[in-house]
Length: 288
Image 1 (cartoon, rainbow, N blue to C red):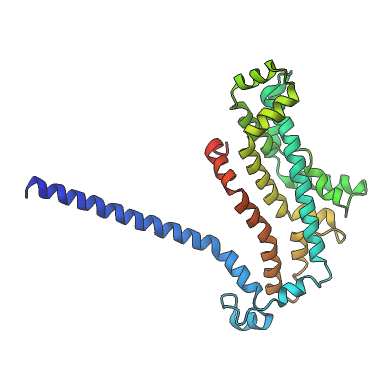
Image 2: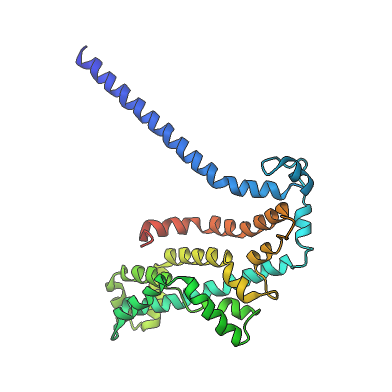
């Protein structure tokens, strides 16, 4: 075998390995995508299936014909699903805006301002992430119940308004990456502390703010335990309203899937709108 034949065989082997690698990668990605999308597709198809048809063919049959009865019935139940939807929207909006605002202030103080005990206070604040929610949720519930906030919108939102340790940590790391020369230049131009924060730091940190906003939206959109405890039978969000669809002797699976589908749609829309900022934030900060 000549050197030319050996070279050709080596090239052919390399090409074969490359093709096999591409095929294997494609199979893995397609499989992962299918596993990820399957629950969403199953939920949507089940929501279009009548209760009788679902009982006959099970959860994996196609709706024939598709019906919208579950969505109509969803808004005529004892619990007002439309009211629960708008309560959730308002709660998520208020909590997200307040958390980002106060987290930005706290992160800027920990990253750029100098005061006694700054680092100790930061690590103590960050240490609250290690405290399980189950430890604080009952005392918090008792305090708000004694002040008359049970079954109120304020009771739902109050524990989450003043920032998040996780958000403060990420923002602090992002703020520390901004060159000090830019801050000094703005101060030379007469910019005060708040101007430096809102005219320089915040615009440069927009990707991480968008990502934190999305994380906050998803977290509180899906929150169940706290609204269940503090809301009682007077204030419902989407998660607790969906839970009321389950009856003692009837699963109401098709109705629950209709509620689940409607609850997912806003989150999907938000992700599609902000996906570029999310990818950019991951590439810049690496979610440190």
